[in-house]
Image 1 (tube, rainbow, N blue to C red):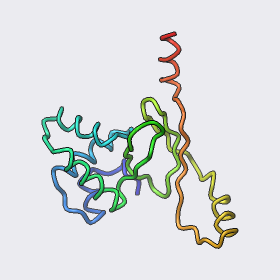
Image 2 (cartoon, rainbow, N blue to C red):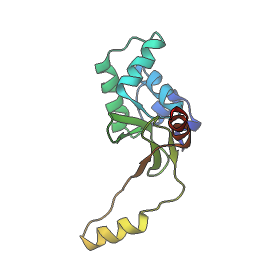
Image 3 (cartoon, rainbow, N blue to C red):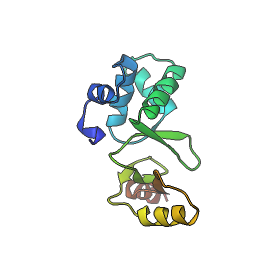
Image 4 (cartoon, one colour):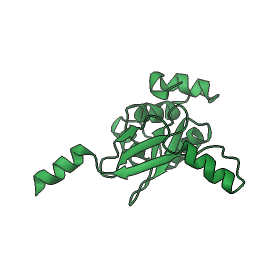
Amino acid sequence: MHCSEHTPEELLKEAGLKVTRQRTAILALLLEGNSRTADEIYLALKQQQQNFGLSTVYRVLASLEEHGLITRSDMPGSSQCFFLRSAGHRHRLICTRCRTSVLLDGCPVEQFAAQVGSRHGFLITGHSFEIFGICPACRKKEQSRV
């Protein structure tokens, strides 16, 4: 299953979660594509006239993450950002300016993780791989300002 192919309600039901207005609204925002911080989600909901408190946004995000629907990333020099969880484990290229993300094909670290795990006696149960940089659109904007 790939999250973007389903509605928020379907994703919640598949995860065994009750469909609520708050969960549906937050998942709908994340289905739009790019990552968002909790504050950005809160402000976007306010613009949609959905007045959930910031603590509610954090509580819902924690629940969605706990049930495997979303994942978080600690962006350099930024707040934590939330993404829809992609099928399988995640590998992303993420712009540190606009937070556009690109899912990477394949797994560039699978063999490395297995070797390191074996060397240290670990049974590897998962991993994530994120590369941070500046996307072409943001670089173009910055160059046009100079």
